[in-house]
Amino acid sequence: MPISQLDKANVFHALHRGPRAFIVANAWDAGSARILAGLGFSAIGTSSWASANVYGRRDHAITREEALAHSRAIAGATDLPVSADLENGFGSTPREVAETYRQAAAAGLVGASIEDATHGPNKDTLFDIGEATERVAAAIEATRKLGFPFVLTARADGFLHGHTNLDDAIRRLQAYEKAGAEVLMAPGLPDLNSVKAVCAAITKPFNFMVGIPGKSFCVAELEAVGVRRISLASSLYSAAMSGLVAAAREAKEKGTFVYVDTVPGCWELDKYMLA
Image 1 (cartoon, helix red, strand yellow):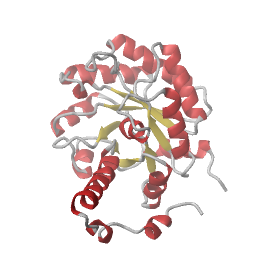
Image 2 (cartoon, rainbow, N blue to C red):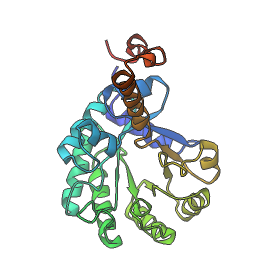
Image 3 (cartoon, rainbow, N blue to C red):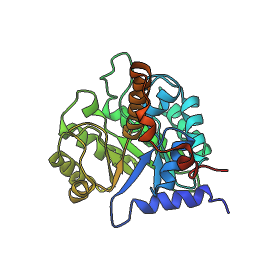
Image 4 (cartoon, rainbow, N blue to C red):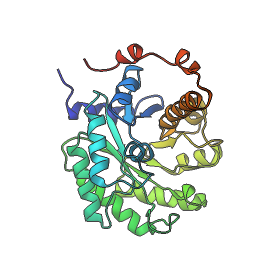
């Protein structure tokens, strides 16, 4: 029998309370979601970067409707719980943000994130901590009325935008936790000591984002400093597309097809797909 959204939500909620940190594998379409599920991951995420690239655009250049349609396709392709990267909530007001997360649940998602970056003309601008907290609270209020445990992840994105004050990131995460966020996240932390300091300052599970060269650590190291969830962001998509670029360049520039002997055949990938 098909797994219900409530069942998926309960599984995702329980994963955050298990004895070990777990990995959320970020897919970019229905096919990649099925492959990742077939490889044994326990939860799927989306990536705003990969989602935008699927539409042939750069990060933060797709609409709420496009992001949710993309998420719906991924959520519908697998029995695993799916959590979406919904950027800063696709709304200029808390009310609009709340509507985004209501629609996220209607798309089959059991979790989603919200950033505190504005993505305005000045790409390095963050919402004021008070406004950012109101936006998190609006998303929480909307998702608490769903009838299942929707996991809202609140992100302090300063380190991705040149705001590298660790104390500020911690203050923001503590405010988002107080507002009701179930999971907390601060992408781009520079070292394990910073990760440890953040984990020690909060009581809700912390999600570490893999994908930044020199700032991505192994599961054992992350578990040791208190990380409960690890997401792969756009790293799997980048790895796949890097393979595409290398193979296409070989064909175009060298006229050879050595890559054919080093990649899985269609029949191997087919085993992960629906008939």
